[in-house]
Image (spheres, rainbow, N blue to C red):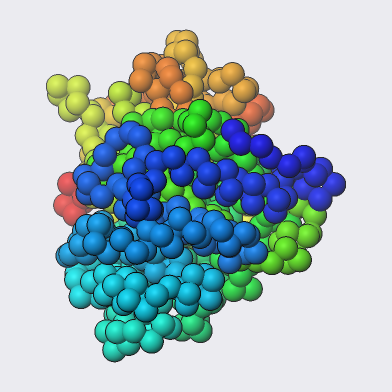
Length: 579
C-alpha cells in the first residue's frame, strides 16, 4: 500500500486516522491508476475482467475523476485535474454514446458531478469549443431512458450541472424534476428507499438514493432531503460494527467503503443524528478495515471482490474499474479541514437496535457484531444477497450450504426456496425487536434480544423442515445435543438451538466458503413440524448466552426469557397467498 501519515491516537483513539490519511489514500489511489490512462487521457483501462457494458475505460476515467474532484474541491492540488482536463478534449469522440439504459449514462453523472465540484478550477477554464462538445455529450443523458431504479438520478445529476452551467437549460431542469419525482414513490418510510419497484433495500440507499438528492441540494439548493437523510442515518449507522466492518448484504458490494458516503453527506447537509466524532470514527474505520484486509492489489488498484478478489461478490455488470464507485466516500473531503468531523476526537458509533416497518427490517449493533434481520428486502427471488433471513458484518452468504435459510424439505430432499417475500410488519419493545414475513408456504417471525434471535416459522402440519444459521469460516466439526455450534478463529460463536419442531442438529461444511474465507461451517437444524410450528434460536456473538422458552397456544407463541421477561406474538398459519 502507498505511504500514510503517522497515526494520531489522541485525536483518533479508535482508528488512528485523520483527514491527512484520507488525503493520502486519495492521492495514492489516483497515482496508481495513471499508468493505465490512454495517451489522450480520455480512458483508464485497468487490468482484469471486462464488464458486460464494455465501457470499462470510460468507467475508469469517470469514477477516478470523481475522486480527484472531491480531493481538489476539498483543497487538494489542482494539478490532479490536469489529466482529466486533457481527457475532456477527446473524450466526447472516444466515449461510448449515451443511449437508453446503457452504462455511459451512469458514468456521465460522475463526470458532470466532477465538473460541477471543480467548475472554477476546470470547467470555466476550458476552451469554449471543448465545453460545447462535453455538454453535448452529457446532454445525451437527458434524452434517453434510464433503468427504472436509482438510475433516474444520473440524468438528474447531469441536469443539475448543465443547469448551473447555463446549458441545455430546459431539458436539464426537466431531468432534475423527473428524477426526483420518480424516486418519490419508492420511499418506504423510516428513511429507506427501495431501489426500484422490487422492494430492494440495500446499500444503494446510502450511495445513491440519498446521495444524489443531497448533492443536488448542496450544490444548487434544489430540494430538501435533510429530514429523510437524518432518519435513514439513525438506523443505517447501526449497520457498522465497532471494528469498521460494514454489512455484507445486497449487490455491488465491491464498492466497499462507498458505504461511508451517506455518513459524510449527513454532516455536509447538517442532517445527521451522529456526532462529528462518531461520523469520522465509523467512516475511517470502514476505509481502514478494507485497506488493512487486502482490498488493494500489489499495484495499489482496488480489486474486484470484498477484502480481496472474490468472484461471488460480483455481478455481471462488474468490471475492472467498477470498484472505484468507492470514490464517493471521499465526499467527506468537501468538509473543510476545520470542520468538527475532522477536528473532534473520535467517539464510538451508536449501538442498539431499530425496527423498520417500512422496509420490513430490523438492524442491531451490539458492538462486536452488527446485523440485519430481513423480512422485506428482495432483489429477485433466489438471490442469496437478498433472500436470507439475516445478514451481518461478520458473515456472508454461502451457496453450497445456504446460510440463514429456512425451507420445507421435499420428498426428494430438496429444500424449498424462500419465494416472494411478503412483509408482515416490524416493531420493538424496549430491548427487543421483531419483524415478520410470508414466503413460499411459510409464515415467519424473527425476534431479537441481545445476542439471541428466535426464528419462528409456521408451515403445513407434518412438513419436514430445515433451518440453517450463521456461516463462519471454520472447519465443520460435528455437534450433537439440542444445538449446532461453530466457533471461528476469532472466538466468534454461531449456534442454533432447537426449541420446537426440530429433532436433529449438525454442522454442515461448505468448502467454497464465503467472502470472508473458506471453508465455512453452517449450523443446521432438521426435523418434522408435527403441529406446523418450527422454532429455533440463532446466536451470533460470544459466550455466554441463554435462550428463552417457547409456549404455543393456537396462533400465539409466548417467549419467556431467563430474566422473566415475556413477549407474545401472533403467527397465523400459511394460507393460499404464500403457497
